[in-house]
Image (cartoon, rainbow, N blue to C red; front, side):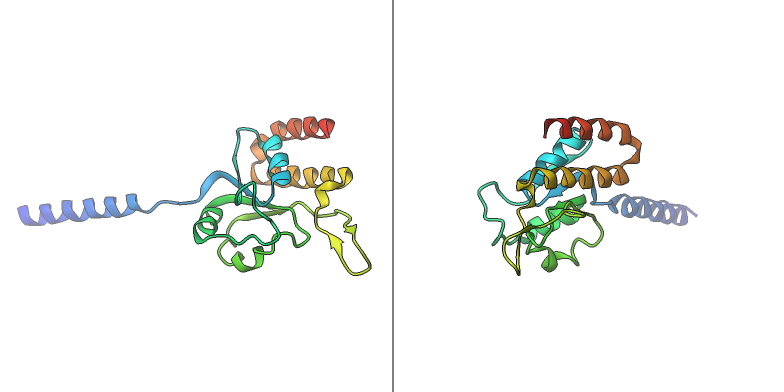
Length: 165
């Protein structure tokens, strides 16, 4: 009887240990951004509700940037990824399978492209004040979808940001 009790206690302990080891690695309070102008908007809207991180370093060339395996893993653990859009994030297609579980915010929705010539456009859409305001609206609306409980907080911050722009 004593052996059966010891075995039962041992099994229960193992189950508790195993269930305690399983954890969700999703960093629910982290949002990554692909570009500094997009990070600025996101920071101004979310303030301290999310930690906003920038992919890469400030001195990098976004046109030829490639993510390391660690950066891909970090992004895949985030709550969301905010991108500029218009193809500026050339690395996005190569990591799409790794980040399919995170919320992707494309800030270029409804933005009119800056035409370079008859066959191409300029992806640097934040250079147009009108487009930058549209990007801010897109980010704001998607942040609210992520965290509806703080909708009023985000709205106030969005309005303040637009007044500054």
